[in-house]
Length: 240
Ligand code: ADP
Ligand code: MG
Image (cartoon, rainbow, N blue to C red):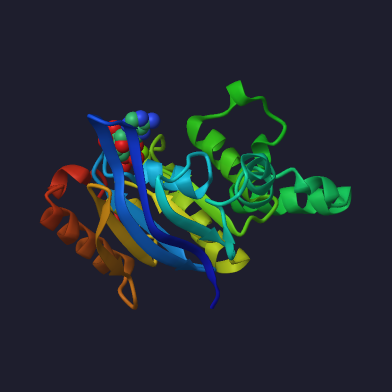
């Protein structure tokens, strides 16, 4: 398997002398193509900052981030927009895809995400969960290599959350998408193959699902959270 993403000892500081927030102290890890990686950690542990640095929304203070072999921390600001468009965000590359193919892809993804019935509706006519699944469809229609999701189930009820997660898992398994999903919820995290636990801008520990069932993995996640001091307050859904 190929390495898709590499964070090489990145640091991120906000503010200036006398008033510095060390959002990321030192984070170093790699993600292989096709992995489903969860990122957990208490509020303020640096999860969003890390995702923003990977997507080039933000810049690192030190270290390097390689995406598909390209050092995104070295790209000229002008190049960043193009790079983002092609790699991470909602690409317009779909323009190059023939109309027939687009239609087929829309139908296929709509079916997977169960939004076929609402394709012709206006946003005010659909629920929050349906909107989130539409956003997911938009993000995956052009089959990006890497999907970064920050609390994707945050606004969803537990049923919608599980549907979205099963879909993301399907994208990972069937379309080969590499997923980085930030969550504070153990149930959501239990869908990942590997979880990095952040604390104070550093990796506290890592957990791999291996051959465990999702239920066993879920229990192990809870144990790590308890050990980290986040404890049971981080858990709101146990309906596995
Ligand atoms: P998380 O997503 O894990 O809750 P964040 O990455 O949002 O954490 O924040 C990590 C730390 O960096 C926090 O202490 C937060 O207050 C600080 N931080 C985040 N963004 C900024 C910013 N733009 N300016 C100053 N401090 C920031
Ligand atoms: Mg955050």
